[in-house]
Length: 406
Image 1 (cartoon, helix red, strand yellow):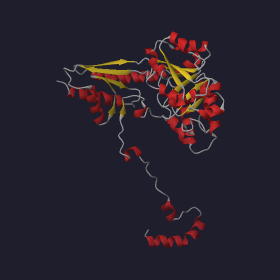
Image 2: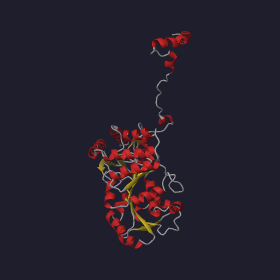
Image 3: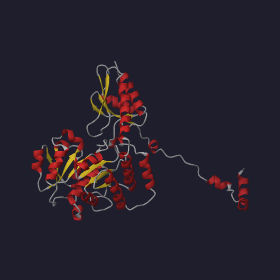
Image 4: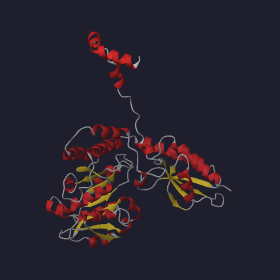
């Protein structure tokens, strides 16, 4: 139909429409917008994507959210709820799943540590809440940590103004406890290097009626760790949400004693005049974190473990066929407890440093991210790989090893 014919048709369309009843004007049909393709912002911005053989580190944007989590985020984005009501309801559900008295969603594990420490320092005293991080007038303003647990995330504690007191032995811990001791803090990843274990640390603190916090940021799996420390009697447990649990990367969980969680929330959003106002976690993230935790707890963890073992074995078998190269599978004792690969090679047979290997993997196609730990040794994490990517990693590793062979 030519344009002039369309115009002529439209001049009589109302009459025709009245007669036909169901006919739609052609121009109205033409006005219906065609389905637009979704934007690929990563491609649009020219960002490099990669196969993640590194792990769940913040630098590498941690883990990928599952469909259940994305559904929770997208579905909740179209409605309003009251923030405190949401934290109440989700906190109750998380607490029940993790054997805690209470829980709240935070903006990452760092935020959980800060807010939990704040709750210990202030209790329900809003005047103290407003004073943080100035704790000079507080009767209790010290936290005890083991020297071997320092250097990673213990700086988090000082965001509240609290002073760290450092010990190494159980005897030193006993002597360090004073009327100024507000809390003790245990960094679970560093447990193998400390002189005081979980149980002894907790027992001494309980003997003196001192709240104890444990940071288990990346220490699931095993899934049982989500309730292990609550069951042991730790007063506060902090965990990352965007690692193995595969919730939003910017979310975490603080759980523990009901009165301490209530106090922590006074220093958190949506309230103002507190140190945690900027640690906002939106409603979509709160619900996404809840959906992620529920999914994670109900996974078939045996099946997951077998899948990771199979991925590691594919890579190990390929590498071990290269003369002078050796791959072994091991499981870290605490953080990132999954089947992991350690790859070594004989420098006299393969002229390649681990630094060169990581650079070659990064610069190849597809790009692969893997960490360098020591010279001529490479650590490969498989649990963040997508199905089939382990075969690509195996191929690229053997290509680089063979290319450098003499």
